[in-house]
Image (tube, rainbow, N blue to C red; front, side, top):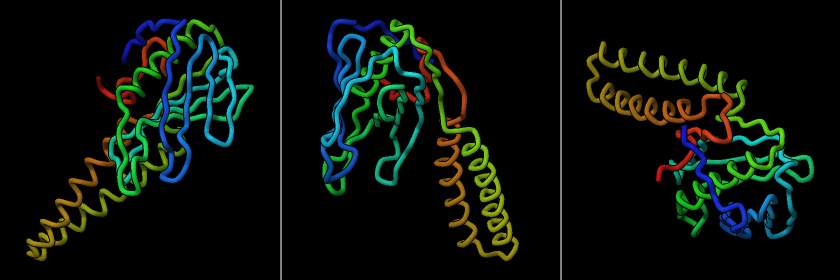
Length: 198
């Protein structure tokens, strides 16, 4: 777990990213005990005391294998979300690890001071996680069985290709399921697996 460092409760803290290639930049600013948000078409403010749920997760994409996401639900606004990457061009995303990390640490620190009844969740929903894990295990066993069959048939080239694919599949999906295990955390102890490293 990562301890949420104390931030200056008076200073403004801003985070922004582009969620799509052609869309507007989304901006979020912590001012005292309020989050101001602006998504181009809509904007608003959320008092920190009205926030009821925060979920941190690891959500890689094909073009960006290291990508984190935080969702925030409150009584007074639609769900808002922050991700650690931003579209830079039609074929490129850039990582905002440091800014994302600093914003989340400041957000959690201020939520703790605000004193609201917030549920801090990590990973993905339990039903999605366990169903996905079951599919992952079945698929892994099926691919392993293909590799064994290829070896039994002395198809060494095919066995090697299947073996490499299985290793990559286990590594990529294994990281996803390890980081996204459902659970709860505290505002003063953020899950290290769901926060970019310094």
